[in-house]
Length: 118
Image 1 (cartoon, rainbow, N blue to C red):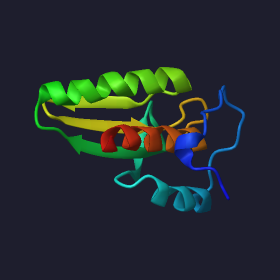
Image 2: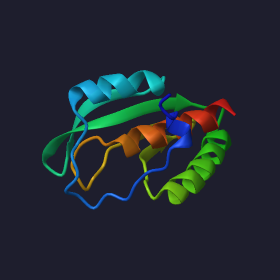
Image 3: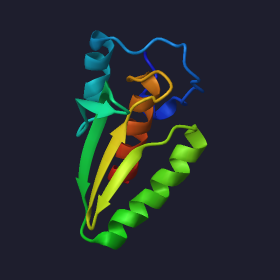
Image 4: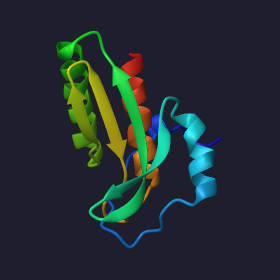
């Protein structure tokens, strides 16, 4: 049986590794409920990103979750982009070194979901 994303570790990526295919993205997407793939402009290029918006009861709750995400992201060596709007956090994941999606993005999304469900 395939190992769940929450039990995998992000692998260092300095570029030169293949991006996920559309089929691989569609296979992984059900494993990260609440996340969706969006084409976004990053540094003048269009890239596939994994995004999720989460609403909290207030600013403190949003920031408390982000402190936990910080710990997970540092441990994984893979960091999300995020924007805080008082009690709403917009997360964006994509692998900068390859300019597209990698399994690492789905691993971190699954671990963020795990924090949200704790």
